[in-house]
Image (tube, rainbow, N blue to C red):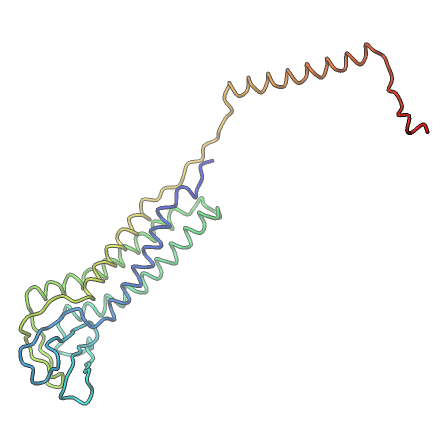
Length: 248
């Protein structure tokens, strides 16, 4: 029978890659630097950079009570652009979806490696792969959308309490977007690896004719030697001789 374990090495690699990708997805969604703004007016800022993330906007200030100032961004705020609102929703969907995909993938890989009910495990691999692709889509859409907004240098109409201008001098993509791209790519690769899994075909190995002939010859030789030995004993007719030590 074909070995099931030898057919699941790539899926095990996909599982490890997906676990790392989900960690990156969760870390990227909580980072503040999806969009990095560079300011010219330094009357409020101690540094020229302002970090705009999915959930908050932060900057260093020499005017406020704290050196680092962070203002929360909520989906219910009227000034929130659609790309950030979509990022909040899709990131919250991607994380539990990725956890469910990892649980299914771990279940499938475990059953293959331990040969536990492997006959109906193909659909679990397919379901895990589909969930990985959905998770990658939920992570990739806001990343691409925010990247497009950065390249177009789009502004955000922050309220006055944020102490932020509506338009920066220039802006670039931050580390959160880079991590989002990396995690999405890893999830896509993992999903494809699980979708291409196929159940190994059981092959019954029959002994070849040469092996049968060799086995028959060895048996014939053994039987011939045994008969020859018994015949030699019968011709002598001698009985065994007792050991003198036991006689004493």
